[in-house]
Length: 507
Ligand code: SF4
Figure 1 (cartoon, helix red, strand yellow):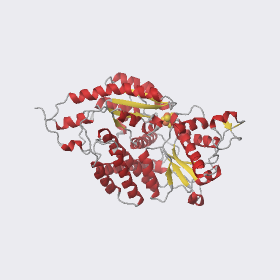
Figure 2: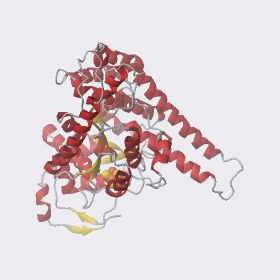
Figure 3: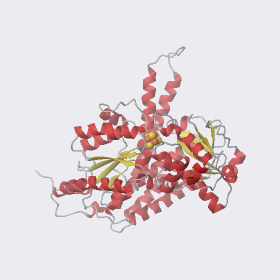
Figure 4: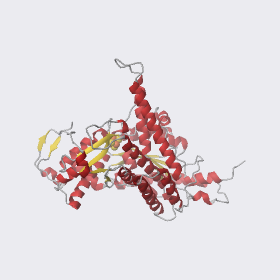
């Protein structure tokens, strides 16, 4: 329980910069968790959520709409969200907390201004759903932080509901009665997340090579409409993905331009967000002539499942008092974990084949754990666990990228010790790795961009040399410019991979 101040004199609409002028009474901060959400309230309520990629947020809203749920995605966090997060949040939080907590406050203040709603009306008509969790990092305190900041911003009593990311569909939430956290809810949510991941991955593969600027984004928007309609009208999603394939095929590409491939790893949210939270890193890299390899959300889901299985296996040998010979609860948990793994993999494979994503394989988390365990204690969860270390080793060993950037949010405990500590050792042992750990403080854009540009210069040279070392065949089959052509030849760059795949075989 953290100590803070109760701002009794503060009223919504006051300038947060003036907070310290307001007379404050010291009191013990207590987090109330007894909020209710009854079926009657639900009929009138709008459920807010957000924080994933722009495409995923929109697809989730449509997917949940198909279940009769009124979910609205709030816009992506920006620097104003960050400022509000800092103004109303506790000191010493990590950067994603400030961005996300401030973003909710910003959205509620916008509702006040644009819809003329009072704080009381907002508290009554809206609530926010987010993932919560436990563990050694600040993720375990997110919910409390939301409530504290909302109270100080004049929205005391605003309901924050959560599901735990590491319990998923297996949790029981008896006290949040009108919130639909049923298996169907989570399965629908997972489908939207997976489809969003697949389309995003294809977007990153295509955008750097498009002949007409903006053509890929336009095609992706059409795909979003197709998938959203399929969700809303409960149509076959595999067929919808196949329709998207036809849309993407219309984007004209020149895929023989050598471009540095940049793998983006790091803390989950900071590496994934598409906005000020990481200074728009992905778009910046693309404008600077790079191709990004993003971390899809499914990697994080696979890690959560692996962690659940790992913990389960660790506890199997511990004898509990009065334990029966066959412990059916353990057996049931194992079956559930396996079912979740199979379901994710199956859906991912079916949707990616339908739209034409062939060269992305889901991470084998155990293989990554084996790769990293000489450097990172794999029992230690929190943040991305062993994944950051493993991605860098895998990239160096398998020549997956010309540059690996680890996005390390300011104030992040797990990512700081991995990026600044362990990764220095890994980079030392794998000298071929071009690695950059970069901090997102929300306040140092110029420094951030200049460090990325310096690392990118080396990556560009490497991509050019790799490409120029190959013999260009006299005939280039037109199929190579279609995104569906995805050879794997061991080269890091996409253009080099293509040339290598069509080069006459030397005897
Ligand atoms: S992993 Fe780091 S940035 Fe993410 S919630 Fe935990 S402390 Fe914050």
